Length: 363
Image 1 (cartoon, rainbow, N blue to C red):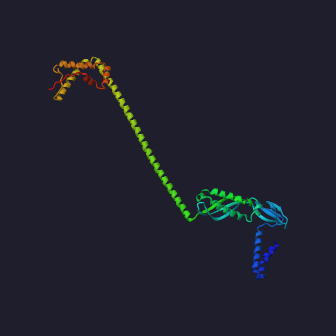
Image 2 (cartoon, one colour):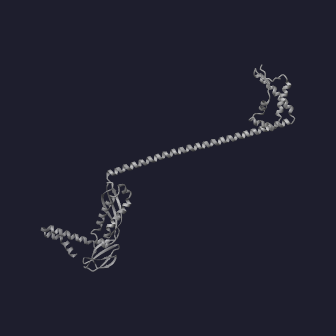
Image 3 (cartoon, one colour):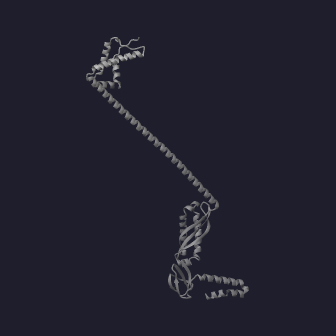
């Protein structure tokens, strides 16, 4: 170490003293500086060494692996023992540079990511590979290209998580011999060619227009269905209202007919009771007057009238009127039965139909 420092301190003077061997001295100076800079990151053997937490120091004794120093106090023999490698046991994040890859549908894209790894075996990480980070970075790039070649472009966006898992599994299979375990891999940016981006944008716009058209048609359909349902409901309600109205009219008409029949029966009962209470003479007189008045009215309204054969005999006319009265004086039950048989005709009409009207003469 002291020799290196002496050479480094005397380097400029050596170059000045031997101008003829400038190239050789420059190469020697560069080599010494490189070794010195490489050794500056390693701790020196001061007999008592304190290893920080989450670090592993690889110690060589006379150029051969001796042991791994654990965190805490450690004692080494000067000159014989030397710290060769220092491995950090913390989780490391390595930036994977951007690279091009071709998908299964022949689309070229540029993709980069971040790799998270951790040193699991310091001995393998020190002696299994020259530069662990560089080796893992190259392995991640090749694995990523291989996995992207198995899927299509649409699946790159849909199956991003599964793609990350596949890359981690592939890296762990190869990095097991290096004492390094890959914890996870995250795809960061995916850059597509300009034409592919334009085509995807057109596809997205077409899909949005399609969805808009579908939603509009569904809205029109729902509106038509609602209008049809409203008309159907209105017609049903109108028919039900008309039905109820007809039922009410029928019920009202039936009640009216029933009440008319009851009133008519009551009137007939009153007439029958009146005839029973010594009103036969008055009834005979009234019937005779109505009979004569009917023939008088018929004679005034037309030139041709129908007269009975005995129209000059008033006594016979009165006798006929009394016959009508006797028929009117029958029991009410017989009158009601006769009325039902003749389809609800008026009693006066019934008796006039049953009466034998004499054949008239034409003047």
